[in-house]
Image (cartoon, rainbow, N blue to C red; front, top):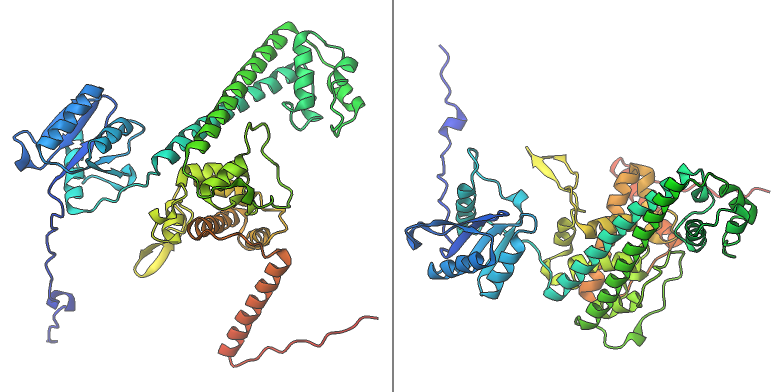
Length: 460
């Protein structure tokens, strides 16, 4: 009979896990809803440790008074929609620390899900110190963010009515969008307003052509030959009126943004130190009632529009979401991870089986991705890097990698107040060539070989 060998795993010494220690006992968990709010405090603080409050303002103050009676100094709640904002502001004003948690990262134990279990689970995790607070910019940046988001929303709504204008024109077989790149430009709007006013002669309408228009007078005349039916003209009229209404609202947002920029804390006192704009082909933001580039420079202390791919409106979107204080993130890796632009390495068995970045709706991350996509034809070092990555791995990974690089540049400029210096496409290609040559020499040395350059042959 062979001698029985004991299983090595069964002979190992098992180490019992230590129980979690309570870091802060003065905590509460809040489950936010549209009409009801469930609050849980430690059981020893009140006979009824779980209470339900309505979402009315008077009930919110009753909630805060009850938390103070229970000696609660810190609460944790999920960022559910926009329902958490009123309670968050009241708790902050009353001096209670609020830990705003991303609902995606707080998952309850398996079983039946109820509001009572959710608030108890939040209170328990928060007492152990297992919850991380979500980022929220300063109050003045939040004001800018609110108006900037409102402006973006109005732009999207106005874009839908531009499509309605194109639909009405096509139904009349007026091919104006085939000869004009933008029907809401100077030439396009002048012709459309004349059509609504009752002018339907193509030759007369084509006279509204701007002198800077690329298409000829004859092309515009041919595109305006259609059937001007009353029902389609009525549809076009309403689309133009809605377009004008949203344009007026966007102008009001621009004026409000100008006021907020004057009220925010400035890192640069004199606007005369603004460096000259970068010399590159870039579409400049038009129809703005103020110099947005100077306002952004005084706010940030550096000119982020010097970075290739970033326009003034893109920088406004980024700063209104992230703010200008980069000390909120310990390092640039934390910043890019918050933007979901860094690889999300998932490791099991000591091996990486997934590296795809997390999906996000972060507006700053979207602005970085759009800026990265615009670098395809850029003659800068960032443009050369984008094209190199695209040739190796495709456009999707190139956009992600370039957006990650743009985020690192913005982080460094805001934190250290350094200026951006573009190496240029030629210099980047030289550095890339030298890097590849060193890599090949290192590989050859591992196999006991040596690289020898070929002699230069002169062709006569």
